Length: 147
Image 1 (cartoon, rainbow, N blue to C red):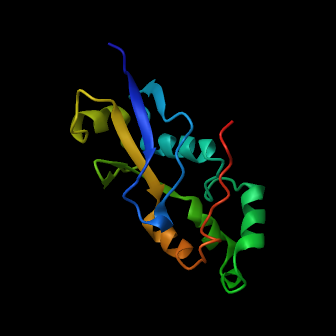
Image 2: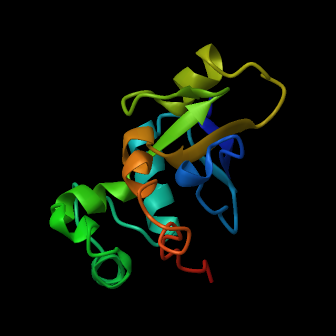
Image 3: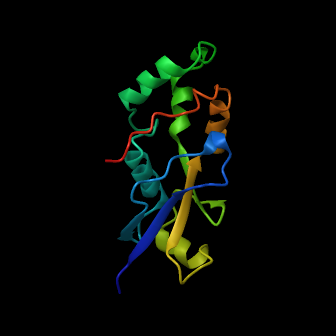
């Protein structure tokens, strides 16, 4: 029996503006059901042109922060600002833990077994709160286009 499944990744449209993220150009993929949420998060960060602050940091993003963040926030540590790129993945509105596999979510959390597993993503709430201190222009993160 194959463990492959279709997965749809969409931005959480119900998220407040401070937590919103752009859509993927190709939101549907076929992948192993053994894939963990932590890998889905890494995939999203890569496809959106962002890096997770706990692994490596995109120099373009650092440059953007230095250029765009107002001088009051520059007193915060750079690491605090870089946590803006941490995201959460949701199924039916509930955040999924990093250790959960897609097949586990499909069998225990997904309420529409006849439909493609659809997971939503957004900025983590505690990191979006930092972003909420920015002006409207500064809230726009430097998303790369997905060519």
